[in-house]
Image (cartoon, rainbow, N blue to C red; front, side):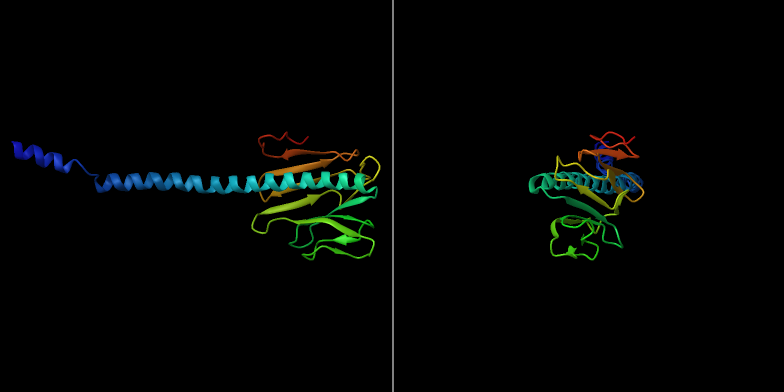
Length: 183
């Protein structure tokens, strides 16, 4: 009798092959659901970071116009694969960033800042106005506009520039924490 009890205890210490396969299947299903969610979360965090930088650069253009007492232009260039924007002084369409480098056509124009979207992310830059001109008086903008950063097939953040030159952010489509939905 004693010998049978020890044999039964020895066999009950491990897992059977069926239990191991079921456990591995459950783990694979959980990981299969988690990996796309982490990827989407990473892309949304990159979207938020780039949208905050865009809003900050719009505020920079406004403050530079007031500081220098000259008009400052914020130009969107989404030609080809180079989604970029450039902040410059001088003539309205004198500078561009579409070629991969900021280039000005006239000598009196200068680049304040040029930014390209990160290459590895499925992000696009759209605007209803190619160039916004911030005036030196009170930082007013001559053409209001909205600039949208969007993930392909996903969330988007819109920067809305009012006639006063003030910038506000809102979420397009899916709700994002900390941002109100665009009207």
